[in-house]
Image 1 (cartoon, one colour):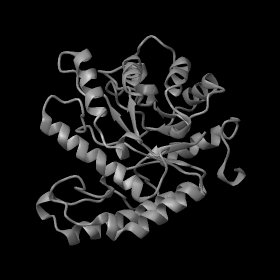
Image 2 (spheres, rainbow, N blue to C red):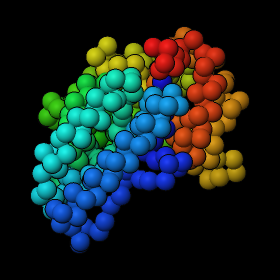
Image 3 (cartoon, one colour):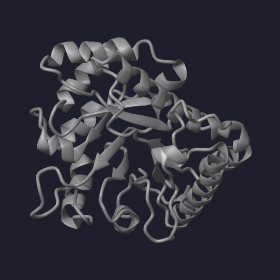
Length: 301
């Protein structure tokens, strides 16, 4: 079991998602921004390694506008050595990496233009992970997409587009249940049609259930992962007390997380904490997980 957090570390004072206005694009501006983003990513990964936080979601903005036609900079070549170095660090220290494109990535859209842009964005994510020379356990998670008044047809459209994706993308994609449209049961049906692994989101399942408890849902989603996909990934959060429906908690609910760990024994999984205070909650979760036989700190591996 590995525990992690997404994209931003609030302790180290830099961001791996710096960007700029599209109207001010230049190859030089892009390269300057990517260089700083990669420097910060290295700092984040070193911090995580020291704290035994061995799961991290890299933000999509690492290379701004990478999938946009305006991007002409050869970023993969320019930063090839840096990407390889990051990948080497990740492999040497047993860190798990994932990515999660923005909500505009909708491969089951009715608009061919949206599908085209979505596929381009997925190619960028796959290319970035390939540049790090990470194996296929480094995943890119997406949602099924829109319903468009006909869920069955929309799921079929997802399967159709999925079947035509590049192999470099297919080897990394996983699909996640969402909080209002597609339940875990829907995602399991998509898996049956496509073979795509299902990443289980605990919080979304609470908001948009499908008749199974969390422990069973963890087992059902985990069964969709093949050995080459790595240990199944889980997204975990709880609701913000007193907040609007669907808003993630500010900090880890210790009691709920303890119940979650106890209720899912002995199933192994890597847990992404989608909690607003990021590494602070991850540190607390790692401290708790040390008592769980599924968790093994890096220095003991």
